[in-house]
Length: 176
Image 1 (tube, one colour):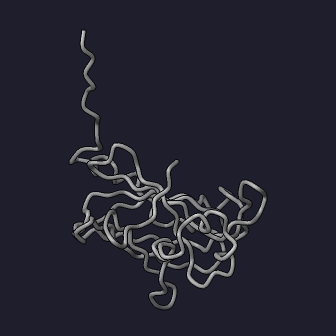
Image 2 (cartoon, one colour; image 1 turned 135 degrees about the vertical axis):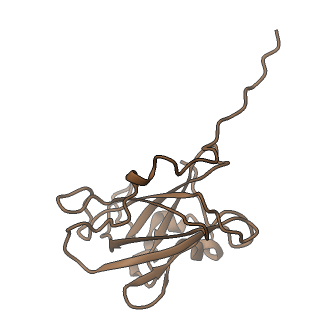
Image 3 (cartoon, one colour; image 1 turned 30 degrees about the vertical axis):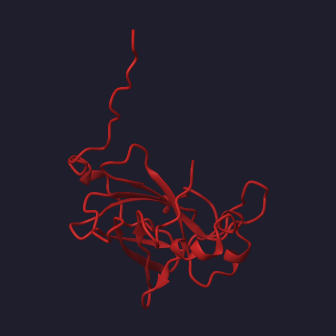
């Protein structure tokens, strides 16, 4: 008897059907603090928009604590026809890493889309954050690629951060 691998399942072309009610684009909720928006796009290796991606976002609150009253620290946003996404949140506080050292404020991001057998995992860091220099996870990334994880200032109360799936400026993704 010959054993043959069966085809893997991907998310498929109808990823958005049934998901609308599960989107959460305001991570800040009723928590106190300065809100800001993150705008970006998900693009493929040719720079073409990925119109059916979904980003899940996980973060600590401004005090470095997860899931607390008024602040869930979780969001889920879809891309539009141009690959664009937007969410609103508060800047997270530092949280302890594996060795107890504080990590730089960041948002954990999982990217889902058709054609992926497993979601992609990355992080969004903040521009000009002093903690970036000592962050253990960011230090694992070659210096010339760290910019793919750090958002850019885009005006008062706005950041820009793009997810590039392949190519020269490919976003750094982590094996998890």
